Length: 294
Length: 224
Ligand SMILES: Nc1ncnc2c1ncn2[C@@H]1O[C@H](COP(=O)(O)OP(=O)(O)OP(=O)(O)O)[C@@H](O)[C@H]1O
Ligand SMILES: [Mg+2]
Image (cartoon, rainbow over all chains, first blue to last red; front, side, top):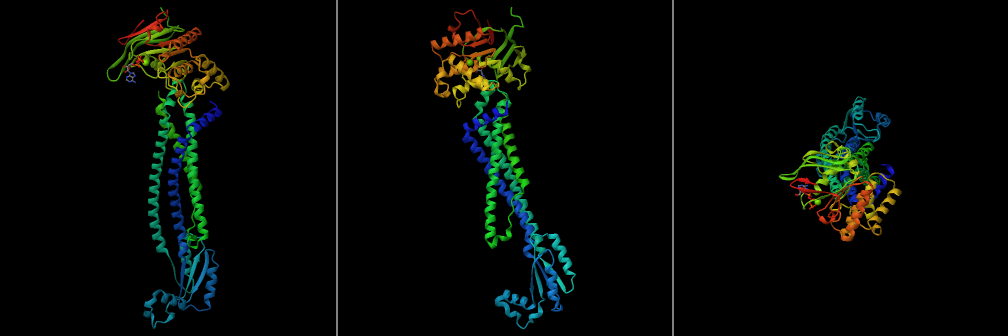
């Protein structure tokens, strides 16, 4: 059987059973869509936690004894670091004012306290593009040894907790994703089954007039291939559109800017499409086998 | 006495039993010669259709062996069955037409499966449809046709690929006298061109005045 004849028969079938084919493609598409959404969520959680550390930045406390003329020098030294995006100097007075502001009505407790009792500090924002947790830890250690620096603080504890938490969330999302994958496989094979059952008479008759199994299966497999390909591509297309839409928001609204949404890595999208095609084709072949024994 | 070489169909001690206790054949021995035209008869439910179904491997005997054109059916793998079926044209009692295809496409199916070129197939289908008087309805769908017309489509599909064996299961069951006459003549003609024909019917009139061999079922055996 030549490829041209195979395609002609497949397209004849597609026209004949257009509605059934459309339904199957839609079912494939919806199933993959839900699964892909969770995949997207999974990768973004991972990415988000990795980047979250930048929000916390570093706080570098100076010793109270540090001479005033030393400060611009330290400022310059920090600014020159490639990991650093922005440095803000917080003098003792500024720190005191912030404390007052924080305490609001209770600020009386500070009465009589020397405004100089708080150490001056630098608030350092980390460059997002360079951010790596390990590198920041190392950097904090180095800065800690500089003369005039009393302590370097960064949200280490927070980041660690966040990692534990996000690990948990990611595990849950991954489990849901895997369950959804099974559901998708189940729903898709059942839809295929319905479609093949609806045409079982046709299969039996073809078999009775001397068609080989390959001849009968050919168009069905071509259709299954197209369903798997179109269905999953459509689903990923929708997820991508949603992603682009959110990205547009991200650049428009300050609040979302830190989100930095990422798309499903490309090799995963290829894997999703390939599995979808494989599922449809093997599902069809297996369901058909039952009717091709006669 | 029929020699083994010239017999195209041979049954040896064939039993067929349906679950649980319905014994249809209890030891059938039979030889049909190449080019023969035999009638297969007996009351309804006796096993005429079953015998034909066994011949094209839609059913398997409980025991015994059958040879078709020198090939033992028990030795055929399921992948080889289609090639046996291409040698056999079957006119099904219940027609087995595809309701979503036109008459033309239904008849062309037999040629499509053997990969005959489109042009050649078209010519042959037209010729056969003309022979059964349905050329004018070739673009209709089977359910729009009368029972007799559907039966003639089934006949057309069975003979269009010029099989060497034709199994006809009540091919005149839905036809009036004139159409029956025509079908009988068509069968005679195919037989004259060399096809072996097994014609199952319970209508005694069809073979009353012929010299053809008549196979009668009785108690799970065949009487000639
Ligand atoms: N698939 C089956 N399962 C169980 N029993 C069957 C099956 N097919 C046929 N039979 C039984 O085998 C017997 C023979 O059936 P068959 O169809 O061969 O009869 P027939 O001679 O063709 O009758 P008719 O003239 O009405 O067509 C019947 O008793 C029937 O009930
Ligand atoms: Mg019958």
